[in-house]
Image (cartoon, rainbow, N blue to C red; front, side):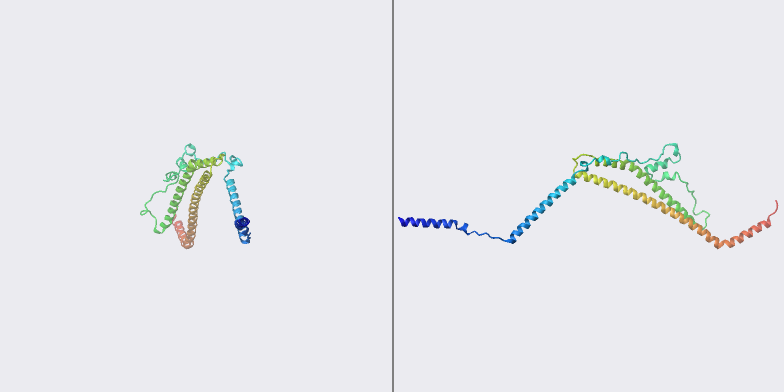
Length: 268
């Protein structure tokens, strides 16, 4: 009986030792490289979280309309300057009605311009009593007149179209865009803001195009004026050169003719 009890106690002790052996066998292992890697990973994740949070806050602040902070109506123009319309109906411009109307709406045919200029008399080039040497000078003067007429017609038409489009479409578009920009509503999304920016960009492009057209007309007019000044100077130099070349013979012929006239003159 005593031996059996001792054997049972020994077996129980062995079972207890076997059951607790894995827990007693665990040892604490410290790896500095793993710890450093985990610390760096945690720091990077924390930094990315803070950056994304700050970006989200910044985007939200940028998405807010200025009307949240101030009244945009103070930046609006109460009375936009209107396009001037040239008088073309009253007797104050009795002889320039058509041309004033062309300055208001344009005139692609040039009819209004032709009605206010001095017309050039028609002539027969083959039968005209002009020497061949004089034709070059005459053609240059005719070319100057034709170029000046073309520039004036085109400038009149462009000025009229610009005035008409500005009065009819551009002014209305600018005023409509201004109303949308100063609208204090906070329900407008990013798409609405981008559309306003696109509209303002389009209006700016149209205005720059109109300025370029006007500058082109000014340059053309300056070219015509330069040609006229050049032709005038060339004519003056030609007259001087002719005087130097033929002055002596012309003076001799004049003196001989005058003397002969005096010699042959008799009292009536």
